[in-house]
Amino acid sequence: FFFEEDIKLALIMPQDEGQGEAIKAAVEKLGYKYVPSSNTRDALGKLRFHQFDLIILSDGFDRQGLEGNPVINYLNHISMSLRRKTFLALVGDNFKTMDDMMAFAVSVNMVINSTDIPRLVGILKKGITEFQRFYKVFMDTMIEVGKA
Image 1 (cartoon, one colour):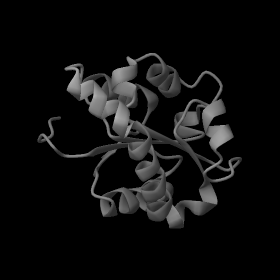
Image 2 (tube, rainbow, N blue to C red):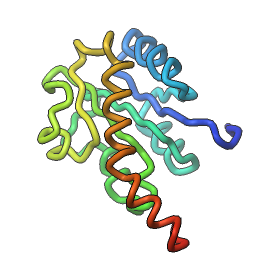
Image 3 (cartoon, rainbow, N blue to C red):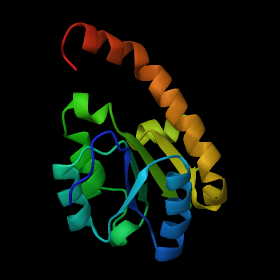
């Protein structure tokens, strides 16, 4: 599949269809093109061929736990210049929403408790804004020196 340039892409890997629909509504409201994935193999294929601005992975997607998760493992091994352009959120029942230490511990930008999905628009807006603010000076410098 192909996407027009300048469209913000969101790869979504939900735990179930209901969660997927709720996430779809939120990411579309934020201006992203919703790109669903049904299994790990499909997700990894999409990640290899497209640059996603937002990735939302649910703990338990495709019956995969966090330990040794192939999607997180793949994202941890791509170049840092690509990884810095992607906001990765992890959704699960055992997280405290926006717990920065937990996000750091599992190598994602943000963790979100499953019960907070109805508030996902505001949560993502805040997290993505902080992410962009954090990397703005770095990205501007990379552009200035011709490396971005």
